[in-house]
Amino acid sequence: MLVFTYQEYLWAVILFSTLVFIVYLYSLWRKRRWFKSFGQLELILKESRVPGLFRDGLRALCISVALGGLALVLLGPRWLTYEEHREREGMEIVFALDVSLSMLAEDVKPNRLQRAKIEMANLVKELQNDYLGIVVFAGKAFSLLPYLTQDYERIFLRMLDLINENYTRFVPYGTNIGNALLLSFDIFSDKPNEKILIVLTDGEEQIAVRSQVAEAVKLLLEKKNISLYMIGIGDPKVASRIPKKDKYGLTVGYEKNEEGKTIETRPEPSFLRELAHLTGGSYTHDATGDELKKVFRKAIEKHRKIVGIKSKKVFLDVSHHFFAAVVILLSLGLCL
Image 1: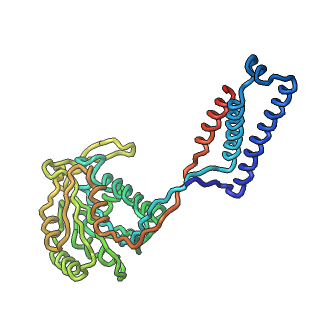
Image 2 (image 1 turned 120 degrees about the vertical axis):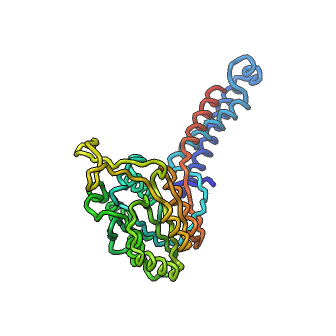
């Protein structure tokens, strides 16, 4: 549907175009009366280059409509359409991110940790109305946010940026999944909305604190409104070394264990798969990191609820179409 920004002046444009057409016709009538005063009007029109009545009328119509179209451009012509906007219920999403030393392996580019952060940030930029939390874990788990937040840019993404290679060397060595699960459960609220826990780890160097794992499984089964998604990252077929970087980002060596041997890391998904099976959760492994964002999105959209549909007005500027019509009509009018 065609609308105008200054709709109230549309009548003035119509009046202006009509007036131009009438004045032009009046001038033609005056010209023909003047020719008729010489007598034999038909002979004069036949022997001269003076346009006939039809051509004069068509030229008058083209010029008056063109001037009217030019005036309509000043009114801001826009094409109005409607788009359906689906209102989605806000969810609670907690990310538990492995920050152990093995996450610095570069079998996933640029490394396992950075690729996980990049894909998490890309996903968060698509979210709306959801409450987010983040837990990091190695030998011990830590919550980077004391509460769930909807401020993605100033709080969540800034906290995500704090996780770097220096951070991984500061936290206790190992991968304590049980501690991470227990701490993540405490972050969720008591509200009845959908809750999703996404655990991302390479699954290596597990600290098997069986009591914590058993307690986490028990809590998850009791709180059935929490959906668990275990995501493994890294190539389980190839052992990778963990590079040391200087301040310029250049590799200056590789991490060694206490015996002086170079550490080689290889993801071990068996424990994660078993844990997901026990809790009724889901386990996915991504050896390259290319599928992470798709896995994240699929997990979230599976639990997304539509609470309503609203129509949204969309205005498209069509003034350039009016300009084109004006040029064509003026060209046609001058050629007649």
